[in-house]
Amino acid sequence: MDDLKSKYLQLIADAGDENGLEELRVQALGKKGEISLQMRELGKMTPEERQTAGPALNALKDEINSALVAKKSALADAALDERLRGEWLDVTLPSRGRPMGSIHPISQVTEEVTAIFADMGFSVAEGPQIESDWYNFDALNIPGHHPARAEMDTFYTHRAEGDERPPHVLRTHTSPVQIRSLEANGAPIRIICPGRVYRADYDQTHTPMFHQVEGLAIDKDISMANLKWVLEEFVKAFFEVDDVELRFRASHFPFTEPSAEVDIRCSWEGGTLKVGEGEDWLEILGSGMVHPKVLQAAGVDPSVYQGFAFGVGIDRIAMLKYGIPDLRAFFDSDLRWLRHYGFRSLDVPTLHGGLSS
Ligand code: PHE
Image (cartoon, rainbow, N blue to C red; front, side, top):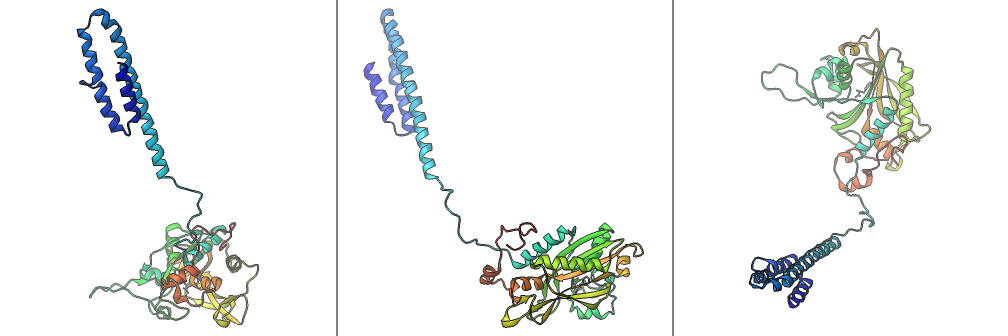
């Protein structure tokens, strides 16, 4: 019995894995195992012999069993240690130095504009880019014969032969969202509507698709003075300066009366664009008091409500703020350009955290 004991304890100590251990268990304690066979011999013994051999065999069986269990858990621990060593990861290593993607200046500026107007109590509204001519023109007081339709270089969609309905258009401005939002929510209202707009035009400062953000504030006591204040606050916050020179130029839009276009002082000297200096003016937005006919078309009573609207060219103000000389580069998807002018994806613009820091 002592031989059996030292033999198995040694074999168990030397076992390299769980399979080997299982083989040893069968070899010693299985039905035909060496110790089980010894147990069977007990029957042939005299009662006296059995009295000493029986307990001794049971003790041996227990001892080998616990040696097996202990070794099994030691092997499992070792396996786990090895796995942990293999899968070890040094989380203190610095991350990749250069972020792979970046935020496009248009997205960045849209976020910046949204943060500024949100702070003044404006919420964000959206509308479709393929628009009916009612929303894009008629409801905005631009009837069928109006020259504004031609001026806007509109893209029309195609109607099937014989279909007499007017074609849909790619919206030429974000102003149709004024109508849709008033229809859906009524007055009072204070919204901005950023989005894509389309006109057939192409040069250094025009692309056939560009971006605007519409603003609309309607209530019972809104005047042109509110419009001027809001725009000045916006422009100062956006360009992150205490003062910026604006020019309100009397203008005409069918959907506002009176109307004003707003230009910002800038210089193009040496091919770089600078804000607040120089002899040039760049038009950045159109604005005015919403025409009573527009309110009427949207189901709002113009004898009770009035307010202002404006439309800012997002691409224009992005060029100005970030010194981007050619608008067309915005839409070329040139990776070198995107790396140069793009923004880090985790720096979300907020007024308190800094718009573009
Ligand atoms: N929709 C006009 C444009 O695209 C801008 C504008 C909006 C003017 C709102 C006045 C009021 O040029």
